[in-house]
Length: 387
Image 1 (cartoon, rainbow, N blue to C red):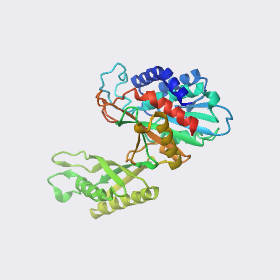
Image 2 (cartoon, rainbow, N blue to C red):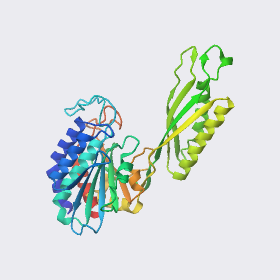
Image 3 (cartoon, rainbow, N blue to C red):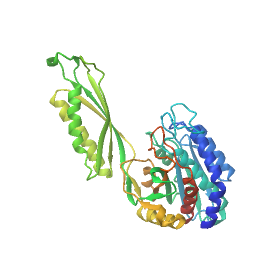
Image 4 (tube, rainbow, N blue to C red):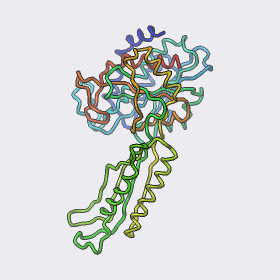
């Protein structure tokens, strides 16, 4: 089986790269993935795979039934959306869409899963059960595409027993893979604060309740909630008061993010943020509106499934190419699947220092060493067949 998969990986590698470049050159933002979903559906149908389209708007689901199709169902997931970033790479397949770029590797995720589908479609008679291919919209933007797909019934009919997904990692060398058992990625909430004071002429301080100063005090108190030991991160990246050198504004807006690994603690932190904002603003007889947009939950890799996946990966491409990863404060909406069925989310190395492919995710120069797909399409198929 392993040798056959490797042979099929070689067979389909060029087509996978072609698809990746087509998708990369034509990126679409969250909830706008109409053309990408058409490419996905056409490719799945070309493989003889049963296809469902317009799932949660732009989602696509492929179903491949093997022997004993009711025995089990293994799901494989990829995300399709791009980011609002202007690409600066000088490549033949650079983004054609102004201000939109696949800067997080979702073009790789999508083409990788299509490659795995090509391999598995040729091995249909060796599949025990059913394989479900999930291509979801909007991983990058709340509301979550994963949550919408689940609500649309993607984990049912047939019911999914286990699910796998991957994410590119420029920190890892191309062709290597990273695994983490247990809590892998943090929950993610968006925090919006609006401090309402009394503005006016900056020289007449006795008439003012300066929301900038109140906002500063709130931020200084909130920073104490961050704790690398827990771990918890509460970080703010935006503060805006539309005043001037001699004008104090009435309102200051603040925006940030909260990350943690404990759902109960997460709820407690929401209450603490609201309490601190209320207490500080009341000291100055002002008001602070708190809006917490609840985002993705903690991503939990099933320990047994992930450990076995790591062993399978070592068997498929060699132990030296597999690494253990620590948990990370980044978040991913694959987390929603991990709260429904046993899940394994792993990392695919796409960096290459010799080729100067080192830019980080969400940057205008992010790119990947496409040779990484030679192993990744086969590994995903191998995991699906042996899970």
